[in-house]
Image (tube, rainbow, N blue to C red):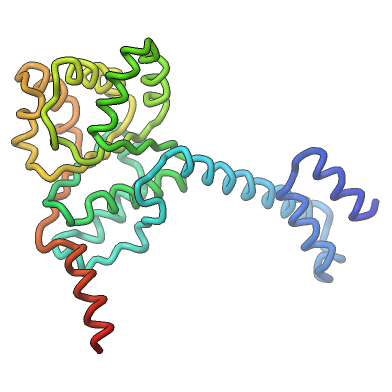
Length: 252
């Protein structure tokens, strides 16, 4: 059977990975003497890799990360003097997601919390784990709007299908009565079955204040804090340090 006919069949069956690998095999002389089962194994592995890459790109697009190009292997630890490489490498394995645990990234503005959150999210996406990124304020607005439009069930299903939810800028505004009840229902629905990454400028000890209701605050935070890996970031603003580094390079 000719290569052209095989490629045509691959295209009909949407076996793009097989087709790409078949072209490589057809051009390389080392495949002439290779046993059929070994060549077939390579073709099938190529299709598997293609499908995984395509799924990864779909997950990345759906995640809507603020910094989609942030990766763990690109972290510049010189800007994070208190951050342990071993801690990030452990979290990058994503076992905490399988165990339905959480990650809290706490520190002043400009310390790279959101970048770290997106880097960890990309590690999850590499492992085919769906992720969603929300600024906390936008999530609350969407929950309230969905309730008014009778689409709350649809929105919560969309969020709860995702094993990892990122909540960026937690605690920047006080919650209204409606917001805190809707948020409590969301956290309650995800409890014991999904994970969170939370970034905040405020210490965990002050998080109660944003709820304006001690009972609900206790109920929500009890489900999060005691199952969390907490990373506190200190020091100068990374944006400032990066700016100074760029200026020094120009000056040098």
